[in-house]
Length: 263
Image 1 (cartoon, rainbow, N blue to C red):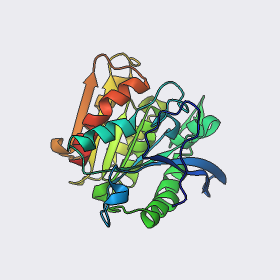
Image 2 (image 1 turned 180 degrees about the vertical axis):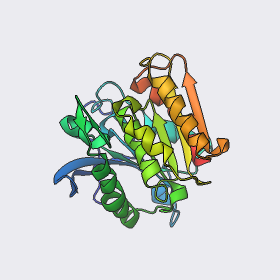
Image 3 (image 1 turned 90 degrees about the vertical axis):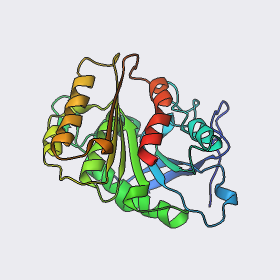
Image 4 (image 1 turned 120 degrees about the vertical axis):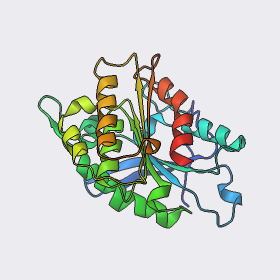
């Protein structure tokens, strides 16, 4: 493994967070992107043990305050604490940096009349057909759908949800934090065509101090999936009244999402 450690002066990333690549090639966009990887505390000492995987958007904000826009999720700290407490048997997390000025395009499956977008299908194709095969080849993963999750917030929540309903045989666990369902009503049309299955798990999170539309739209999406026959024990809809559209909120709520999705 040709991994490197974050080298930023004020890095807060724990010792089991690495830079998988500074310039991982994305053929779908003809671009290169930094990719992070979090390895469980026992990865180096556990022999042939394999681990489930979680793919997360906005890699800059997941592990390291030095690279974050406005705080970090502290995914590494959260998972290390869960592991130490015996609440986790280990999880590999792959963080994909957003493309900054291309973020909206990549994280939106449909176009917005003002903000553009529409490259989400290509982005998910990158995850499914380029990045995931690389991870499964080079790391000890459980590659099946029941062990593979995807998660993000805001537009990252939107594209994670889209991935879940588009590739249910790839992503069996979907974390949808503060999703930007406002971006296009077509995402609701997509959900209304979603075919029932009895294995995909969805965790929806919304905050009472976010936009006025966020909680109602997230609840609407939850109810659409319910109407499509998704069992209640496959889904959670959590509304925290103090929740804001911010990394501190997603940081705090991450452990409960993990407990539901991976247990």
